[in-house]
Image (cartoon, rainbow, N blue to C red; front, top):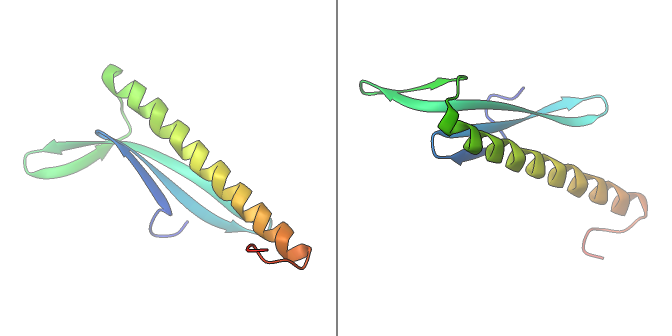
Amino acid sequence: MSSKPVHEIRLGSVKAAIWANDTDSGVRHNVTVARLYREDDQWKTTSSFGRDDLPLLVKAVDQAHTWIFTESQNGRSRTKGRANGRSEDQ
């Protein structure tokens, strides 16, 4: 995995980070989720979610799925265009 996510989704205290991994069969994405909270004067993260966090978690994961799906579709259409000898603008 790279040192920085390629995309982040933040809904309140819930964050979904999308990571790109280069593989022999192309880029694959993974998602990590965390809840941010403040303890004393420091921001911390946890993988534990309370009842009220769950709707935001579901939405963040759904948005991550949509982002990954869109990216993979864009990647396929660019590859198809090159294979046909056309650029994206044609």
